[in-house]
Image (cartoon, rainbow, N blue to C red):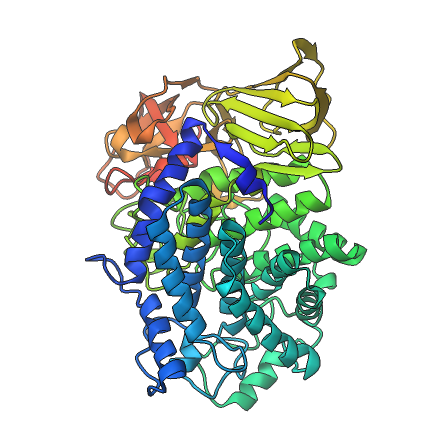
Length: 631
């Protein structure tokens, strides 16, 4: 975390609601779940696992009592990180005290050599580091390192930071000093070590991140050999699935996004970060190739990635089914991480456009508007009775559950929302870059002698106003690719928009106003995307829209857009926590009792009501579609 989270105060209605929701509802609710205090929610036991592990280490109790999946520790880590960001905006001494108690328990669960992991302390003692493919030890360590850095930077407290430095030192000794072969089965530690390096200045952590990234795929058979030697298993994952684990070749030779989408994007984020920090041109080129492949051939219109439930994975170019899609919430969060690091490598609107698309659509759809229910999978088509029921669609739930046994997504959304400032802004060589349009005040008084106030009703309003107090500011304003026309005034004078790689560079003394084109528009997929052939989707600004049964007589499967038909933005309403709906000119197919018929379908004119995709699934079980046929 840089200091931008502390420097930027959010004021706009859209994101202020989410910021308040994080502090008032999401963080307390998730804490209660992690403590097993929410009736009806899936049991977590994650905090209790640490208490039991601390009893083993500190009090000599017999191991036992572990509950959950092998990576259960990471849920606590992500919650601590999200809570850290909440404390910056909403200081809460009681919450901070409870976090400190959890941190003390984590510290007390640490082995003498620095090792921290409740699964191996309670369930598999003595088997540490023998199953890198499945056991998620490095993954859990990575998330806890991120939590430690976030809590230190939010509060100045060092207990968790020192605990995880000892764990990182243990890992350094294992892989660098003692030269243990292998690499993480689930990448995460690589990007976390870069955060630890920046927080502490200890270059060993960057060295370790680089080693674990560089060694990956140097021996594509490492997991095969490990599997033959270890003599035990967790799930029995196939070590021959090299593309699934991103170890089919060295990272600099990768050309296409493959395998488990979350693992992939976490790895690619570390690659881009290392390329930036070490000036590694080959890593930079590999990162650019991978981002291009994802964004141009394997990404849904919503910013979702990972087309199949079989391995939660990428499949192949243009394979983007709507009803059986996976599009895990965590995968889009990983894509945002990746895009943000690519922006540090090169300021290019392609990266910020993708970052915005994933954020406003898939990531926000991953959480109920009340902050208490969550999607793991983010479909583009739902039919109750089929979705969540038939074998190929069991993963596609028509309603958000309160929690999951595999609960990686809920706290991931929380930490993403809490750290929004890191994605909205960056400052480089005296230029302030505005990547996302978020209302608030950015205080750069101590570095540039300036404050920048942003006023906007985005993502529904079309105006973004920047007001400068203090010294004039060099601003780089993102010009989104979706806005067919843009107007810009700088200090009262109309300025030609001639974006350089998606950014307009200006010198602003007092005020700059950007006017975006928020007219709703039809979008069409590449002809190679068979699932969307003959169909269209609707977007307004950065938001993807969908048809939901509640607004359309219960049935959306029979709806058709009129080719070239009218699209109209409806007035901002309080429905769904405040949305602008879109009305589309279209048709409804008349139903027939016959499964097949020689008669052509008949249609009645219909006004189709569309809502922002992020808001679907908040009004009970419904049909939902993003892509509708055109006639």
